Image 1 (tube, one colour):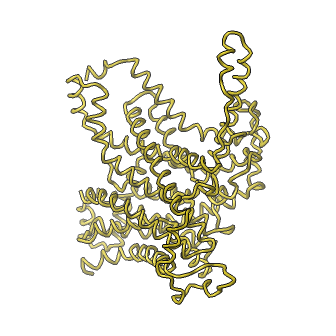
Image 2: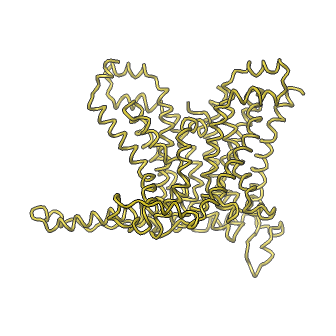
Image 3: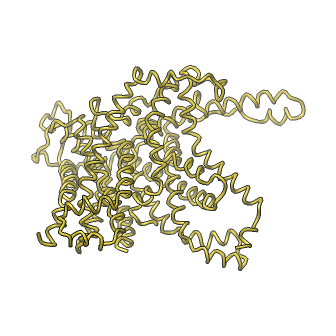
Length: 312
Length: 277
């Protein structure tokens, strides 16, 4: 067999499978996004089967753009993704620098720290929203009730009682509510993905130029300026990669949002698609195409970055 | 170096304490989940039993009765194992060709494979539901396996490729001289040489399959439902079943966390596509 045919033959199963996986469903989404297609409609039963005669042009896109949920879902997606990115990168850099130098038990701390990353999303959400954040029965509720009780007790003590009587009664926050459920999601995903950032930054820190650092120390550079002018620039590339990989993952967050609030006031694009898909397939598909466009904007940057180091 | 060592003893102690505090803080929710799993449902919501309580195994012993845990766990194992095996079976020959017989198109091919990973799942939600239902594959192990394999195939190929690239070409070529055919080369030379890399790729793929929570939830109801689906279905017990829910959750994530500890390093390579070293 010739040298050219063989690699093709070995690669073809993977390529064909991925090609089908990518093209078939996506072209169906594209097609559905241009036609009227609903699952239930008693007055217009012809719309319940996909057909080219139900052509709607850009009508679905217009419908989606005009629905008030869409703009909100985009904003909310961006709020969630950007908050998570900011928190994980900042925490990740700080923690990586903190635990990079050896100290007693470094290995154990690493293991403790990485563990959240392997928790399945469904368990993550169930654990946080119930056992930790529940305003009455979770740790939050118990802690707030404990503080209130202590403060109430201290009000009657002499001397310092006057100070504590100025304290308000604290109210636990319900994280299933409309305004707060996004924060619950941000919190739980940050908890899960900070370890990922730490792991990557630590890997990168290990290749930091130690000689340069020692020279800086000899020159009397402060710890801050070492961090600012040596470590942070060294981490520039890993930070960019962490940001992009996470952006791709978090743009399609779903389980956490579903479990925390069933999307109540906390929709993101994938959730909105799921909602539309209960009946209005045309709108769901148009929203899907928007989601693809959004993901592609991020993906192009990531691919460029990865591509550079590829064949080194 | 003397200056570095001198820097400050107190600083080092403070740093170590802070590092431990951070590690424990991040682990605390998992610890809490496990702790709650040993409380009865009634004790689990009582503030007086926060840390001190009579531990019970009741929640674990009743997992089958309460949640039918083993059925979902079996589905998770079956789908994750087969998806991993198939991904390797397709991925190894592909990565072999890319690493040892690269052509001008290899780089583009790799990038294209990566780009399939970036397609948001929700965008193809309805077509996938439609296809699986019309093919009669909805809620079957087969469908879950195929989907899990496909979403992880790009990562598997990438990881294998980065491992294979490290193997000197001469070793493989020596095999060719001896007249071994391609399959023989893969089976007798490549796989034994890259065994470590293949094992960690498999481990990581298995973990991703196990934790997958979009398609396993949307494409199953009961027959092929995995642990993600089980937990998702019991999302809001309103405090009634904290004990038993913690037990089933701990049983769902425990084995994977332990597996994860063994492949921290590979995780970096697998998730950053070799771009961070």
